[in-house]
Length: 110
Image (tube, rainbow, N blue to C red; front, side, top):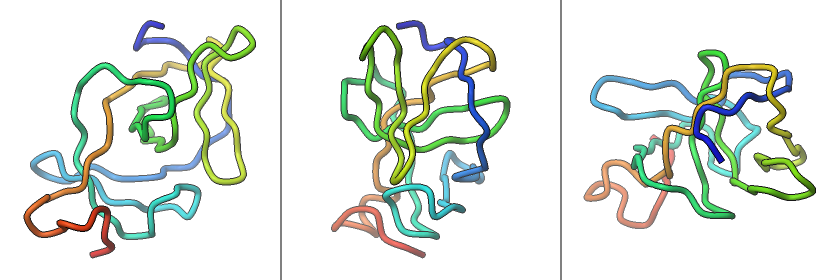
């Protein structure tokens, strides 16, 4: 799957990027708590990974489910988004707690 596939969906901004590559959750449509911080590791993603994507300039957070019934998908709580080819879509990478030395237990709200 190309990282530059396209996505057909209506979406809201799940997170915002701050200086230094720090992201903060801004939506309740993720499995992370509102206000949680994370960074993104730009590596190849595997099925089920919690990923950060960019869709038409908006950040989308969800689980990556590739090549199911001929489509790639992003799973969010209560919502399944199908990658189809109508809107610019880019995988930014796998999500990781940030900063790790301040949040040793994982994704904690600020």
